[in-house]
Image 1 (spheres, helix red, strand yellow):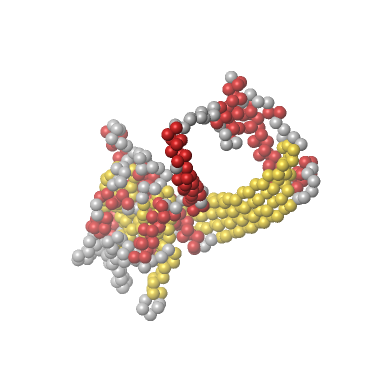
Image 2: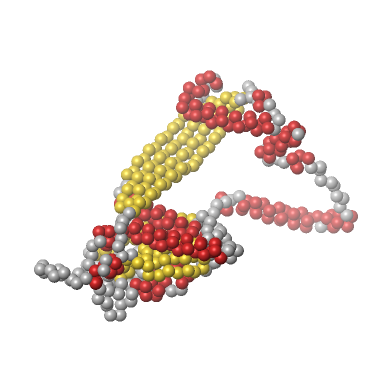
Length: 487
């Protein structure tokens, strides 16, 4: 048994050195004599054979050189899923004369008449399309991308930035003295000793398991001869209310989701009016004006297209009121192999979740606060150390280049909304993966708010005060919800 463990240790050591037991134990390849006719052919056409071999050798060398070229070692940008989403995003913006960041529209006299912000966020879908929970992973990716976009928006409003840079150059050409080495950097050496002790303890356990005596391996003393390092730490903190921020458009494939958001002063005022329950409602139908459900059906089309609708949109109802529309969905975690009872329960749970998701979209549009903390650290360090082990001095060089990114974004929202109503429920299969998904579309407007409080069934109270001037309310409609930039 002990022999087996030693053999295992030897295999580990030989593997680390680039050899294997198979290479060490394999007998030399037997010599195969060449047939006379083949030998004669080689002798007669020696020059041609040499030329072919040289050509093949050059070709193989070329292939090997190409395989190790830097340009062939890294992912290709054009082949990334995220790149496809960004191309769709850029096409969307270019078609509408928009751009990421602040947008300002001017009239013919050069006076600014409209200003709005467009942001972008991306997130990967954490599960493969074959997973039963893939549909919910899509929703989670959308929420993550939306929150990332809001985090970037909060940075543009107000942020606190702290930056610290540190550079160190060190060189020691004194004779090596293990007892004085610790004095060079007390804290660093204490931490290094702790890590080294932990690593040595683990190695001793492995050696004992392999039947070896750890005491026969001498410990090494290390002295730093030179160091050239640079470290930069950047900390960004931001906190802001994001009322009025909503989804402009979203793009997705089977690997990732991208979300564009839009914010304007007008959207913020609408959100605050909803949260305060303010704003007069109109109840007289406008001739030829489609209802909100009709507008959504005309824009979305087939039922399966609802799968790709997320977030909040603002439309105009048939009375001229601004209408807030929220899309929610959830995947059914069941397959054809499950029992009917399990499938029915999964559908029921998904319906409840889809309504909750849509309701949350309302709350986050009306009144939400986002807190962000972003820490980035860049380190570049080169060290030369002199190692003394068993009376033998050697030098080793260590290079460490890397970065640390710690991003934290949190969103809180709480509000009361009266008059939120369901205008559509749907069930469809994902056109690419087949997953069963259920969804719900919720709507709120001043009209639905007043209808919920039975305002239209009450006799209007007589007022002695003069009637206020009739409010002007522009009507907005678009095939994709956004072609008229109603924000």
